[in-house]
Structures are given as C-alpha cells and as structure tokens.
Image (cartoon, rainbow, N blue to C red; front, side, top):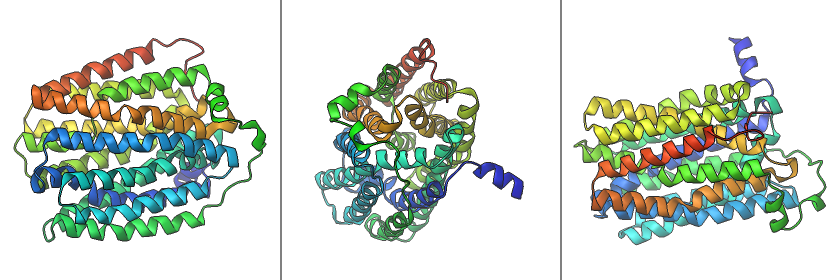
Length: 396
C-alpha cells in the first residue's frame, strides 16, 4: 500500500495537495448550492428552462474575460497566490446570499458575482498545478486535483440531499458558507516557487496572445466548437425531472455522475501522460455524443441512470486532460495566459450555447436539444481526429 501511494504521488508537489483540499472544501460548499439552483429556480421561483440556461450561460460568460486578464497579469507579475485567494474568497462570500433571493434576477446577479471569483482564480491556480509537478506527470497532477475537487462535489451533493430532508433551500444556502471559508483559509498555506523567467518577457497582452502557438489556437477553436453543444449538469437535472423523477432522485443521479467522474479522472490523466492527450480528449467527445443521443432516445429510469454515469466518464476524460493539453502547447512563460485564454474563449460561448439549448428545449422538445449536442460533439471529435502533425497534441 505504501509503495502504491508513493508511486501515485511521485513527481507531485505539496502545492497540488493543498490546492486539492482547497477545491475539495470549495466544491463541498458549491455542490450544496449549485445542484439546487436549477431546482430552486424552477420549483420555488417558477423560472422557465430557458431562464435556467440563460443564468448559467451569463454567469460563465461574464467570468470568462476575467480568466484571460487574471492569467495574463499572473504571468506578468509572476505571482499566482493573490489571485487564487481573492478568487476563492469572492466565490465563498456569494454562496450564502442565494438564501435572500426571491426573484430569478437576483439569482442571476449573485451567480455572476460568484463566477467572477472563479474567473479570477482559475488560470493562476491551474498554472500553480503545472509548476508544482514534474513534466511527465502533468496529466496525473491535474487528475489528482480534479479528483479531490470531485470528492468535495460528492460530499456537497450528499449533504444537500440529506439536508433537504430537514431544511429548505434557503437554510442550505446559508450553511454552505462554512466549508467555503475553510477552503479560502487553506490557500494561505500555498508556497509559490520563484519564477526563472524574467518579467520583461511577458510584454503586452496583445503580444502575449500572438505568442501562443498555432497548435494551441487550433485546439482552442475545436474546444470552443465542442462547448457550443456541451450541456452541463443543469440540463441533466432538468431531464431527470422531465422524465418524472422527484428532486431527491435527481440529486441521487447527480451524485452518481460525480462519483464516476472522481473515480476516473486520475486514470484519464495518467493515460494521457503515457499515450498523449489527443486520443483521450477525442474519446471524451465521443462519449459525450453517446450520452446525448442516449438522452434523446430514452426516458427509461435505468438507462437514464446509466447515461448520468456515462456523462461522468466523459467529464473525467476531458476536464483535467484539456488543461494539461493547453500547458503542453504553451511557451513556459505564458502558462497562465494560455490557460486563461482557453477558459475564456470556451466560456464566452456559454451564453449562446445555453440560449440554443433552451430555445430548442422550449420551442421543439428536450430530445431536439440532445440531438443538437450529439451533432456538435461529433463535429468536434472529427476535427480533432483529422488534425495532422505538428498538431499531434501528445504530452511532452
């Protein structure tokens, strides 16, 4: 057992473990809130599905631009920790405020503010992960971080499910602030390494964008196309309600999705270290397409549960691996800028993606939304598959 643990942690720095616990407590807090938001909006505030999709899309898109600038400034001043602390702090402060929402517009404002915190922290945090591990285990490093994030998500969703038996939505939102505070305090234990790259090498943001490699830009285009058809957990939960399940059953399926994600995210990262990022990401896109077509063709409870699990496997295949992929294709002095650009560009299409999904759902049918997602995911998979050298996108 000791040898297995030593092998698992080989090349993994202490910062990654600390960030893992930061994400664990933060996501414990988040998942006490976020799975309940679509249900809170639809059952308590009477919001329509298109409003639910619009809120999620606006929140992600508003935060996206900050991911670029926080990443760029993190590279420029050679500091990551202040951005991580401020970002987690802002997100933590926002979650209890959902308890005081009585119209969907206030949920929108708070959701945007919470995502701004994510926009500030994400790129610098992901850069710390890349700088705190050996190059040959970067996929595994991101996998470990995402797995600990996933553990927090499972614990948070389980707590939300249990607390929902005794408390209302608003009381649970208030309690979610406690683990969020713990996560913020843990950021203080991160120790940044001194950067060897001179500050003057990171010039204006325009020059920094131009310095990003053609391979990276091409991959970002493909990932953005995929994101146009990628539905998140909000649609999964609404689908569960659509086929006749109650709120508790929907949350159980959500927990199962995150359990599968957590189990497979480290193996997915490790496989990408050995065999390259490209085949892992393509497999993830294909699994998402299979999930989409399955949700379009069935309303059977058992098959829907299986599709929730398949969605978890898909998410494990791309979540950490795409981040490692971006770093592979990036000049060393521009890690955070590149990660911020990736998060921002893919995040900026969240509003149109959400509007398309919502309009298809309401104007046609839920099945139409899933058929659309299937088509877009297949296009992205084919584009990535047909990419040729030097865009082979293997780990370095």
